[in-house]
Image (tube, rainbow, N blue to C red; front, side, top):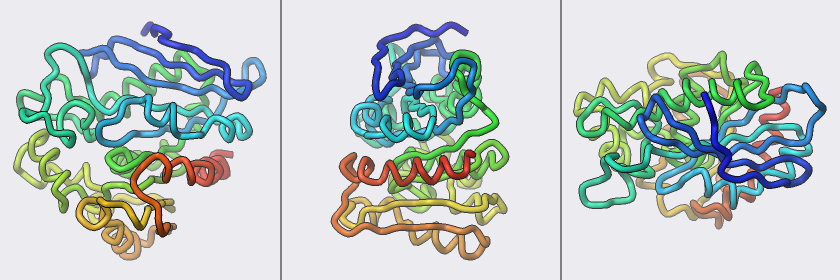
Length: 280
């Protein structure tokens, strides 16, 4: 499948690119960013996937994440997809709310109309885009890790738990750990997947763990001053599920930090080094 290069910039000896392609999964054009660090000709490099949160595109972490210096040092490819399909004919929230529709695909394959045609972010992120990465970039697809923020943290946890043999490590920044138990998730999963809550469980990290999904360990960072902590994120639910399942969870609560990229960029290096140690 062909890619269009939207932009390409040299950074820390590597290349930060932004690319566009026609997606068969979503039926739209999709844009994503990839940082490829400096490397020897012919080398294959480990991959870190970063899934973004509500209202975001690939650009938020690409511009604010402060990952390139560390990725260049560690030899990590860093991939940032978009958070939803976009374009003419793609339905949005009827009232224009930020927490559903455009910018809020929740990394699921919608089954409900009018969203079922285009909102196929699960298939896009777990199937189509990895195929493109393997075809067009010097990626060692046998060494992959995944992380994300907020809604993207939810995506990283659910994808990592669903494909434990694909991802050597899983982490998250301020993730929505149990969308089936919070307002953001009720709205998104109900409208994308319907009102049968049994269908939500495979897109809920806490429910997945309760139902038997396992990874060896997880790393989660959370700001204590995050305005969404008590109502939408609830990391204590993940902590309880991990204790019951025997999953080693490193949950770090940071006083004074909020939900923003000031928080994410502060701890991005920690996550990248944690993943690199497990990617080999």
